[in-house]
Image (cartoon, rainbow, N blue to C red; front, side, top):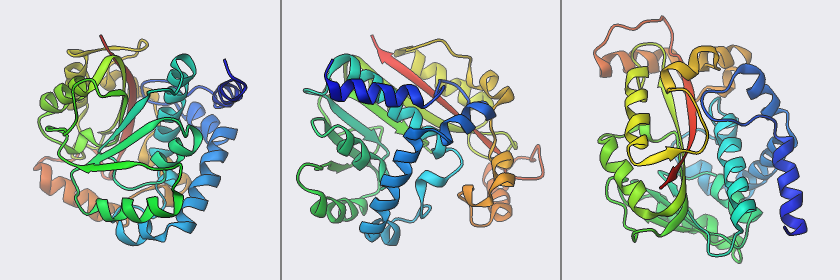
Length: 290
């Protein structure tokens, strides 16, 4: 193993207990305090400062890293990609960010591992202009390709990618089976799928625990687990929640007006809420194509 990879392996070891399933409070706190998270913070801050087009043009949160679930999801995906690259090397490794939006994260991956090929794909065609604006000052070697397409119909060849990650996107989609089939198609044999998704605990937010279990088992019909984990509806029993973290720091919540967002979820779902506030948890898992 090269000196570079040995050093990065140590960095991942210092990012304690980024595991599959729903993180417990102590796991979450350990990761947020880790050297790896500090590195993410430093690079994300510099990226946003030097690329204002992202904050000005993209309609999500201004600072994606400092959002309740992403503070766990980004380190989760980063660590598992690191393990895969440490084991197999970066040569000929093509990674797909499925449902990418426009954030610092793929550029951080490219900065950390310049030899990888990385493609971002999102249904939002307007993101092409943002990616073009971000890429220009970073080239070379930080070139990242962007393609606009729905996840149900990915414009890529069979077996094109070694790794595919999808962060908090699947809960906002329809036809899980079609998306999972596409993920399976574009991954090479033995390819790694990293999927994270939110689970609504308030009875109205996307997606319900039962729907999360269904999604998980649809994925398992095409992939196998990289390591054992409980079903989503069992995994979150003692896990973090947005309500819990929002009490610690309201800025961690992505909703500018949580109460109005909760009312909107009630109207959209046409269900009676189980709790009197918006509340979600997050599930993260690694899957491998047979």
